[in-house]
Image (spheres, rainbow, N blue to C red):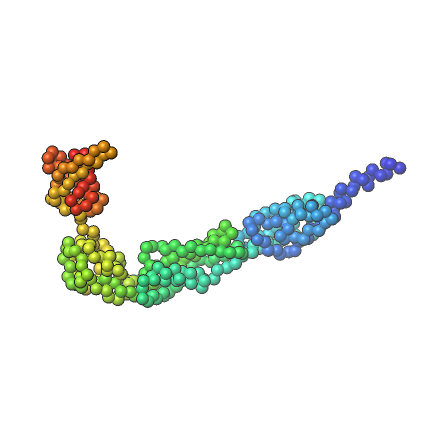
Length: 306
């Protein structure tokens, strides 16, 4: 009698295992980088622990957001040995996604430009064209706008980078930008090496797209000197001005040598012009030796040796 009880006892684990049924529809949608059985299937069984373990089974990598791939029945079955699998010969798996419309991309680019041109009285954005489709995983997304050049006016392009769930997509926005603002204009002819004073500059409104290096705050030019002669009515550019030197060539200066234990001075002659912090050549009047010195103020330079 005992021999007849052995066979049923051996079959108990197999029968219990066979009670797990996995049902997968023909089309499913997943989130994340990996396809998990629990995302695409209904897993039924008497053992909750076994069901939970099967739900975490990785079936493969997810397609890109907005795209799809197929899983073959045989491929799934190989991951689920000993389980009753109910699914078609192949399953279409689509990645959950969200699309950022071209209109939204354009709005982001235009808002960025308007912020950069906040000093302008009026800004016009024309001929906006968005290149590139932005499809991201479902969830919260962020963006970063990068200019293709330092100019925000005229014909220009912006790169908008979108990120979501570790995934990145880019779109390029081509546009034409015109802006009007008050800029610094020469009120009179300014000769070369002229130190700028208040009456030398006026503000006039101009369209900016064809201007380079224009100045919107004339106060920043006061005290600077012209590098070239500038006719009356010229829109002023930053590259036409420079900070005047503190020390001029041929000027007698005090050379200061300082160490933790010593401070010595000597008279010297500047061999070249120098601004604050510049290293210039200075000739020691006593030794006639020429050394490099740092400009400290209009009459003082710092040296490391006489």
